[in-house]
Image (cartoon, rainbow, N blue to C red; front, side, top):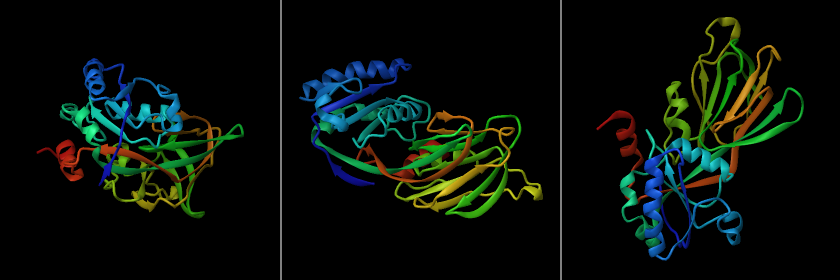
Length: 280
């Protein structure tokens, strides 16, 4: 994490509408921000003159899930994002104590900053055509039916695994503490420029040659998945919660784009990891 200086005048404030505490916090926060001379908007497009930047800073009140929804809605903006946790785990968010004095913190413009990579998936559909998906957290390649997926997996166009099982999770460092971790993958420090490939319940029978372990790869790697038994064994791709079904093949690599997450200067990744996942 590096220190960044931010001159902010326009604040886009997004609160999870399904969380009464987040909504109430937003009601209290707006007048504080305005008294500090900041212009506050509560929806995308509130500052049309800002163009693609949308605002100088985006403040998100909610959990990790609402953060993902907001990032998708805003098309993974280059504007720095300061999240405050009103969810269950909130590993990507800052503690609610950060709301006290937030207006002054924004005025001072001193934050810690994490620059997170995005994953980019080029998806080909069974029916023809395709779509490009971005993911800040993770991409999940998964079965659509009760039957296992049969896949040909390649890395940089080199055959890697003839796979049978539930699928794979591909995650960024930000997503390494979510689904991938639950499936047995490692945690990546946010300063590590890499992605993790983790298999989901691979078959162990020798005819399938299914990879049984997680693999950490450079972001420039290109990981290919081609379904080999369609339409019988349908494949789905889920990018940060956005689903695309009836997929024939997928190629995943690191995007050139980066997401800027803001932290208090006293934030330490290892301390947060201990508090959220090990216990103090």
